Image (cartoon, rainbow, N blue to C red; front, side):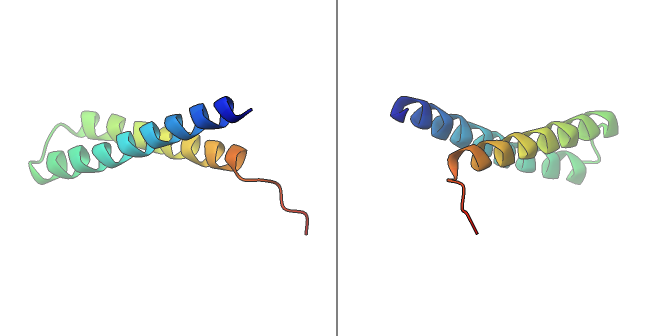
Length: 66
């Protein structure tokens, strides 16, 4: 169980890092008036990463009974 949690935490860290990197790349491309199709694809990837991060966070947080 602990190893599974550690692997989820590592994956979460990787996804957050990639999400931040995409922020930087998208901002640079938008500043340079880069290829709009490429920017759109990167934004779509960023949204997918956000969904994965949210899912992993929900797996890692214990259920709270109200």
